Image 1 (spheres, chains in turn cyan, purple, yellow, red):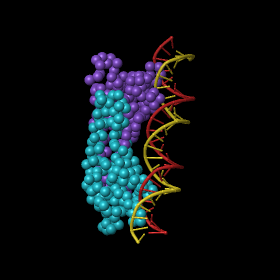
Image 2: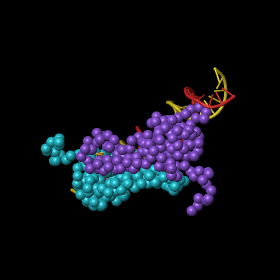
Image 3: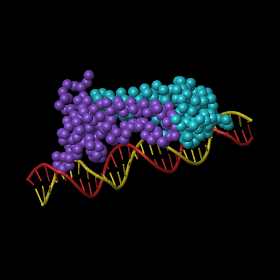
Image 4: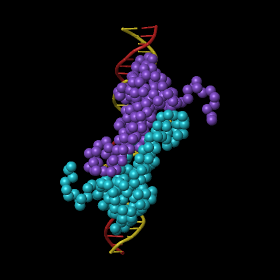
Length: 150
Length: 150
DNA sequence: GGTAAATAAGATAATTAATGTCTTATTTAT
DNA sequence: ATAAATAAGACATTAATTATCTTATTTACC
Ligand code: SF4
Ligand code: SF4
């Protein structure tokens, strides 16, 4: 009942790209460094994000990735589900036929509610919101000035 | 991001016991048959439930399990977390020190909210509620009379 | 007390999923 | 044409889940 590493990395990558703005090409290396993602792992993650039409991958020298949709149009849920698949919480929510009781089971209904709630919460927040606040990216060198001790 | 098999079986077992009432001894075999749980697997699951003080295990002939607390006093969340551990959704919620950003990360806050909501939903429903409605246990032989086709 | 019925406890095996790495191929700026 | 950058997917490692199997313990009953 946990987000996978790949899921977390995908979110970081997407938030970083959103932070830079839609359509702005960023090198893979920069993303890896700033968002602390193993380089080879990101390559695989990016493939899935590209397949899902969330980013465009540009090869060649000066290559990299950029965000395809507007940051407002992508939710945290979308990014997460691209990586780990649709969230179901319990098997019988995914495939009701896997348990003959699913139609009458009160436990099933609780899982269904919990699942909808969870997806709604993750679906309600866009990359735009996440990127405008501080998140996922270590404090930018430039913005370290006054001590952050409070 | 899914309940494990063991978690699902534990819930079934607990709902079945709750259905029978607190303190009522039921043989392991009966539970396995009625709740459709592999017998040897239940043995291991029961050990954890007993360690968590949710059931008492009685050995010997006429042995079996029974519910220790009142059904109203046990939530679905409790049963699930005994089996799969406390729900955190993302690693940084479990151990904020695992990501240096957790204090300022807006994504972190979304996960935190989602997690609290999920635990609240699962925590709000007791075994008593679940057991009084039809759930987890295939329709009882006695109650099969009119065809269940509707 | 002895016996057999029932489960305990934990070791072990099989399966599946997650994570990470490596190699070869392709794209593209210069 | 060349070299820089990533693509694509195969491969290896690790960890978690699921299941089973063996030996030990408990206890009702005679
Ligand atoms: S018993 Fe209920 S909760 Fe469990 S798998 Fe079946 S429908 Fe789902
Ligand atoms: S970047 Fe944010 S969400 Fe991701 S691990 Fe760090 S604190 Fe958590």
